[in-house]
Image 1 (cartoon, one colour):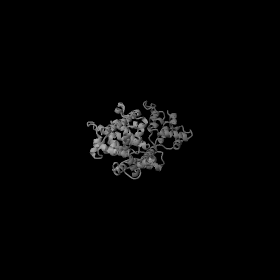
Image 2 (cartoon, one colour; image 1 turned 180 degrees about the vertical axis):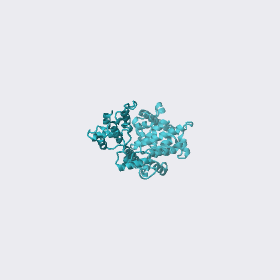
Image 3 (cartoon, chains in turn orange, brown; image 1 turned 90 degrees about the horizontal axis):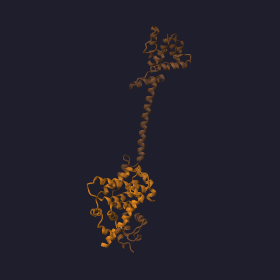
Image 4 (cartoon, chains in turn green, orange; image 1 turned 30 degrees about the vertical axis):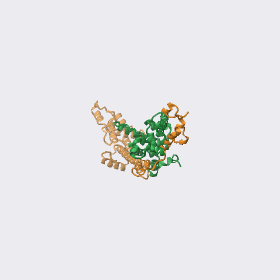
Length: 185
Length: 241
């Protein structure tokens, strides 16, 4: 049975504190949130993702909706956490080089090498992170959350048309960058 | 023409229609089926949305335990937050309702006791209990007013007339608190009632002095005697010299 079909049962059990249900929610949600945060704030991703998970747990009783709405809600929390973090450290510059940081952490090897061998998830996320932040966010919400343009628009406070334009630019830019790399090899 | 022949496309990336963009972002396009220039993008997007790796779920146990504590801080495995809150709410309301019942009983009893209308045993008990918390109410033998029948009987059988009759009835009705007839008596003797306290026949003064108890008694007397009692005030007024 799919997560979509089982979600009401899982949600009810999780609200009652059933660990099996919380584990199911965690397995479905945490990797998505972690990847999103790694793309946009790699140095704080683990901590932020943990905070988001606890925020979700605290808010379970208030939440109403299906599994898509649940993911959209969790991404909204994650985005807010990200905004808060950046506000708190306005003196520090934005972190523009997630690829290098990921490589430094030893989580992946050389991105190009990974690309040749078969793209890993981390390398793919790192590649998306090279996009301008608003474009990267659109792609991440859609591919990680399985969310529609309208749902992404609701999370980001943008119009659906703006979301479409940003995601379109992001895809064309990715295609362009991939080709450039292939040409320079 | 390939997608890369055009210099503008090279700047912006290869053409992509809206539906294909949506399918790419849903991870629904196989690299081999991707439009020209997008095979690697399709591969990249599918990799980004791949199922969780074990490393991403390493902290699952701790995360779930922490969430269980947050969801159910006191009883981690059974009743969930809504049930627990309901129980707390239920206990709260039970205490609240019990408090209201006690308060209502005290106030209600106090009111009835103050009016002196409780049965003798209850009146005495209420007087005793309420006096212990500083509320003064009369005991059973301290009723401020006799029954209407008693007063009526006096009103129709007393030998007193005029002011004296009014004063007597007012005094009984008010449990001795009425000063009715004092001024009336003076008026009857000297023929000059004080201007500042005009006597209209005992009941007015008795009513004031008894805090309304005299009026109650008089009205009850009138009712109990089916109109035979003209009440103390009426008689008093009628016989005022």
